[in-house]
Length: 413
Ligand SMILES: Cc1cc2nc3c(=O)[nH]c(=O)nc-3n(C[C@H](O)[C@H](O)[C@H](O)COP(=O)(O)OP(=O)(O)OC[C@H]3O[C@@H](n4cnc5c(N)ncnc54)[C@H](O)[C@@H]3O)c2cc1C
Image (cartoon, rainbow, N blue to C red; front, side, top):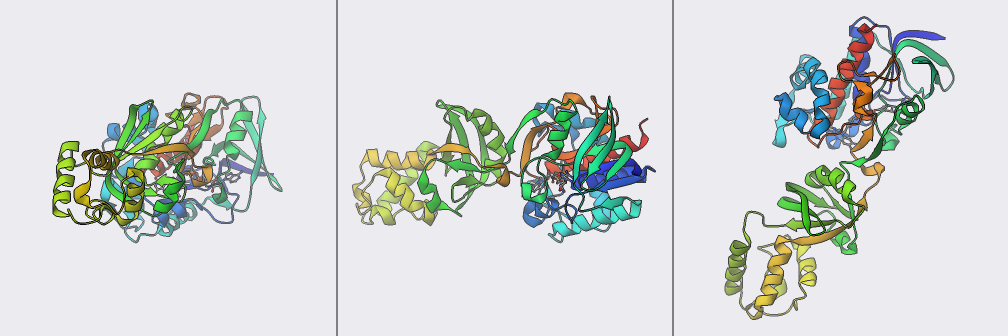
């Protein structure tokens, strides 16, 4: 049976950093990956460009983005924070550029370049990589993992780090195996659900808007006529509903509300108050008195949206704009400020950027990432019950928790 100091399961961003760091600290390390290729999901990140991290150097603001549980990350960020991540890649020759929303990307625009540097880190530190190897089971003896069963062999180590990710984009290899093992070892999982996930909308006609991208809109989430949350920014219509940064960022909150009906209300003109927009519509009407209603909206709205707005307004499309009644004008105003859609459900794990839930934070020591249930077991990355917004937060979680888990596993008795 092969024997190691540290065995890391899962070669995503968390597992790669954990393995390299443990080896840097002197451990004999094996990194086990079921795929033939390392970091398959990493290659998809940022639409193939990899938003490596978020240029938020203020730690309290960084952790606040993860909600009330974010403070769990203080120790990990202290060991390996945003600045360390940037240095790690730059020192290995990766030029990094800052984009809108404090997002940091490789200047080349290629996630492959990030993966290349991580792979070099593994060979530089002497990590033994076991690709095409699926871990089937962790064998326990009281409060210790004794060995792990792979497809065709067994492996033993002093310490084990589980970095198998969540359940999102399962075709990349992240199929939730780590959750099952953790549960069988005595961890009480926080129910997982897709997060940073598109929405499926009840109104079938959203299909006609597929591909329409909205900039500078405000979208509010309502339940029982009460606003629950809102965001300003970019969104996108898909063939079944809505996606885009502000939708993804609200999806977790929406998921929790969905036991009862939930509405989205889109304000297409958030820079204008009702009265200002009404004045503008009246001005447009004055200037276009003789135009048909259906031909009078192109200064107000994107082309794709016009037929839908006309239909929902109930206004006769061929009616002369000058003949619109006050009631019709108000209806148009309402559609521009509160375009309402009803949410059917969240899209599936197949489309979710991240998995919320997982190993409860109270069952992991934040100073070491060690399990509080099994003495020689550590967790890092998406498998733990923490998820951040879009913008590089989730990869930073992997770099920070992976690094800390790697060095703790190598050093801790
Ligand atoms: C489309 C998309 C775009 C994204 N873009 C960004 C972005 O730009 N910036 C950002 O911060 N975050 C982004 N994310 C989120 C980010 O990719 C994840 O947070 C991150 O990949 C999680 O890393 P991980 O190492 O925890 O797990 P994963 O990356 O999921 O890696 C887990 C690994 O474990 C392996 N594994 C699983 N089970 C076994 C087993 N039984 N035996 C052996 N190996 C196993 C898997 O094959 C996999 O390689 C994106 C996610 C998606 C889906």
